[in-house]
Image (cartoon, rainbow, N blue to C red):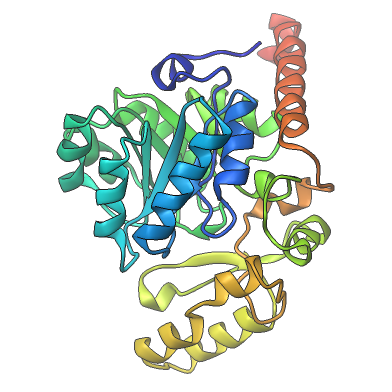
Length: 319
């Protein structure tokens, strides 16, 4: 079985983290992932602090294993959610969509493991100086908020730039992506879209069906003019948003149009006017199955690939 130092750091069996997906990464999914030996993560998103506190207490009723909370730093409730994570002594805090540097000392004094998601080498280096425990290097292939650099080139550059463990993310949905991340120097992977299509995820079935049906070019990036690009499946909503951006609509109008669209998709199942945040790995996902089966398949495929690679003759490897 594949085991890396990140497993010892986080107290997990397998070096796999579940992406902290807003509205979809609830206690139900996170507990299932943690119980299966990986690290389940509650996605705080734009949710208020009371909701997050309830979710933390709900996951503790479902598992005694380590779990984490993803705090989205662009959220209007980010500061309050940070307080909840601190007060509830969450084992692992993952941050996204911003620079958590000033928050790290507070988390560390409480004994929390701090793992920021970064899309650049510069931010990874800066955050290492604050004393983070690991970093998720997330390529532009991922769903939701994205950077500009691909996973293939971002991960090895971050590995070379920092001493803390690096977790690869962005476009990873199977054992092949897992092994590729390890080959790039990562000590583990984070998967979001793959776990979105699990039986335990509470996302609406309409949303899951769209992801399963999606092909390699099904996603688009919008919100670039706002400085916070987002990847999602193309639909009426994204086409309208892109049209508004091209027409030079003011930021306030764009933000108003986009407000609540993720919940509309995940909770209410509106696949035309909701925001179907998903990564470019959609074409690799063709079913919805239990979390345990997803993790077992990823690990089994990865081990088989590693075994195959180890048998390649040296001459062929250098041909």
